[in-house]
Length: 197
Image (cartoon, rainbow, N blue to C red; front, side, top):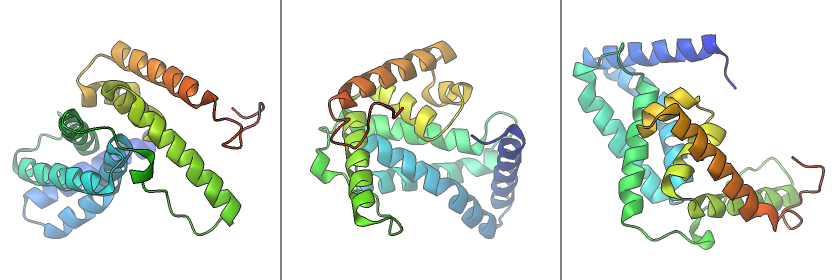
């Protein structure tokens, strides 16, 4: 979890880059894009389970940010929180018209460092988690991903999802319980023993 000073510095840096872009500094746009796009893509991919769809959502969210830049009010919103909210809304729109993705269509993460056994087990765990996330109701999925994977605070999630903090707490708690129940039968196959939390 990032400490408060790091979070504040990142927020100020994002606001500065956005203001510089609005003033015509294209290098600032590239820097801000490099800061925000990976997070936007990661969130969209975890929610949608489809790399191409996540790339489309990320591109659309960044385009909306660039259009918003000239009238940006740094005191009213943080760029990172705003982009998460746009990504969440775009994901909701896409999920309403899509069928659930199957496990075979989810890309496994590529990490060359660990050995093949570790990579296979990590891949199986990732796939199982991704499949379980895709079985959650949309709002629970968004809340769980934002809180437990992206590491955002409940007030930020409430702003992104446009709900109250109590609703966020309820959504994340129900989502975690559903994930735990969904994955419980796979503990042995995924290499978790009784001591693993």
